[in-house]
Structures are given as structure tokens and as C-alpha cells.
Image (cartoon, rainbow, N blue to C red; front, side, top):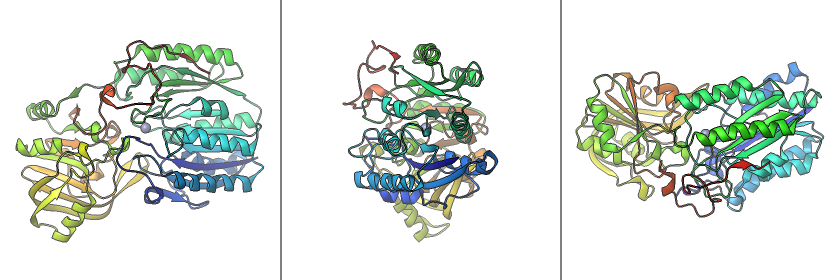
Length: 489
Ligand SMILES: [Zn+2]
């Protein structure tokens, strides 16, 4: 038995002012066959990593393709996408015949000329391998679950957790179902229900937590191979954006259709009930100041690099400084130039620095202040579950009672090391402001005495009605009140 595995992945915010080129993949994951590290999966490479671990025991040969992944940002350069895609397809062609293909994709990648990158890849893989080879795909729930993908793949499984702490487990699921199919123990059929809605679904909140736990309990019984909840990725102007439910059933399509419909209808009934409360900036700061335990963790989802934002919006920071907040720390603020200037000034130096507010109108104005350099570190990192996320060179500065961590590799707040590697202990702070939507909860949830979500003026508005879509298929909630959800495959 021969399996081929590969990754090409990013989450594309088509409204972002930062285009994504080959350099962004080189900065992140750019590995040729055999170069993938053995100790940990990287962004979206879990199917390859899991297959490598299990190949010998399960009795199959794994042929590894290249792995390419970039941090979320704007649309990928067309020639660069085609270069990566064609390299992978060339490797697959050379590996033929194969019994199975494992694709570790994100699901919300857009390249110039390609609204549905993952659909394009699956279509070209199918054309090469033919109808008998089993194609298994792992996606992030913040994806566009397009008809093309579901028609052309055999098995698609999405992560269930948000924060995404189950990437490896879901890759195991994909491999399990692909192997069962190849051994004649299962015949997967997929059903897709379109909920016609845009919303966010952190699984750390009770309603969504219970929903996901129930889906998990159903799997493995009554022929149910897998149930995936497509959250959607709201910051992309593509026709098939929206929440969808995907059921993978063994053989019985009618039964899969009925289940997808039942779950889909329930998901529709959860509209408006799965997001946390978002406070305005000054209300959030006042609430944190009045709270008499510490730390209070305040999230700034609207400037989350994980959704393609620049992560250099200064509005919350400016208010913290103006209100003379004490024992406050904020991070990460992406500003490689300011980091360079801090290294030039040196540890302990006090000097006038302009930082933040650079990339676009939604970044706000830069801050000019006399800062003290309180931490400097080359090649910093933070952890996210089992993976290490590079931060590049980092500097920590202090303005009054507010400390700020400046980073060079644009990414969201994930691990406590974002602060501790620069000598700042977030558990000893009154207020910890993190730029992240919900992934921060995995590490910061356990230390937080209170969590506050803020709706700032960053680019990822929490009010989806404010996003200037022109190509999203309507009607869709909450842009439209009346919608027609239903089974589409
Ligand atoms: Zn995601």
C-alpha cells in the first residue's frame, strides 16, 4: 500500500493590505521531501507527520511531498501558488501509482485567479490519481467548505476545537478512515448542509462546548465516520463563504443526509448565541481596572494576526498610556523596524521611539513616546500546544506603567513565552492585553482571573455587517435576516 502526503496552506484575508508571496512561505514552512522534522507537526502538516509515525506499523509506504505554509495575510501571488502547486503535483506524478493521498490544507487559501485553492488542488490531484485512489483531507474549521472539494475528495475532516488543540487527533481520524477504506472496511460518503450564516464559535464557551462534545460522542457509532462543523472564515470575499456541516457516513448516503440536516438545523438555531460579549475599549479598560484580582486578560480579536491582521493597531495601547494604567502589558505588537531600533539603543536605554500604527488605516496612528528598553532577545518563540511558533527578534519596552512586547515575525498571542522569554511574568500583571481571537485561551485562560473581549478599531471587525463583501453569495445571516439553509450535497 502506497500513500502520498503533502501540505500547502495559508488562511487568506482578501481584505488584508499585506500580499502573500513565496517569501512568506519561506519565513514559515518551506520543506522539501524528507525535510519535515520528526518531533512535531508544523502548520497544517499533521497528516504527513501522523502518517510517517504510523507507516511501518500499519504496513504502508509513505511518499512525502513538499510542505508549504504561510502565516495568515492577504491573497497569495498567482505565480508563487502555481509554482508550489506544480512542484507538489510533479512529486505526486513521480510517485504513481498510489493508493491514497493525504492533504494537510488550511481551507481558506485564496490566490490571485483562484478563489478556491484547495478545490483546485484536490481537482488536479484527482485528475492525476484517478477515481479509485482514496483522497483524505484535513482542514481548519475556519475554511470555505466548497462543493468542489466535497465532490472530489473521499474524506474531509476539520479540527473540532477552537482554539485548535486537536490538529493531530483529527489527522489521525483522516488516516484511520483512509486506511479503513483501502482495506475494504468502510465506504465513506459525504453529506453537506449549508447553514447560510457567518459567525465565530469559540469552543471554550458552554453552548459550543456541549455541541462539539455531542458530535464527538456520535462518531464511531451507527456508521458515522466523522462529523465536521465548518465555522467559515469571515474575512474573505469569496462566493462560498459560510458555516456548513459535513457528515462522513459509511455507505448510507440517505442516513448521512438526514444527520447533516438535523445537525445543520441545530447549528442554525445557535445564531447569535456562540460569541462572547465584546466591550468597547474604554469600558474594557475600566472593567479591568475595577477588578480586584489579577491578571485580567483582555483580548483584541480585531487585530489578530491569525486572521490576517497586521497586529500593529495602537488604539487600545494609546488609551492604556493616556489613562496611566499601571502593571499592564500588551503583546504582540508587530513592528520589526522598532525592534531593530531597540536593539540599536541597547538594553536599559531610554530613548524616543515611534512604534506601531504603520501598515494601513486600520492600524491607527503610530505612538511616539520616550521608552525604556527592558528586554531584548534574538530568535524568540512561543509555544502553541506541541508546536513552537517563531517570533523572530523581539524587544520589550516600557512607557509609564505599560510594557509592550514588539515582535519581528508577525503572529498572534499564543503562549506565555511571548512575555516570559523577555523577562515579563504575565501572572504578576494587573492587565495582560493579547492580540488574538481565541487561541490565546489555551495558555492564557488558565492564568486569567478574568477574560475580557474588546471590539477595537482593528481590521477584523466583529460585526460582520461592516465587512465590505461584494462576492459572497446572498442571502446570508447576519447580512440578511431571511435565509434559506439546506442540504446542498
Ligand atoms: Zn482556524
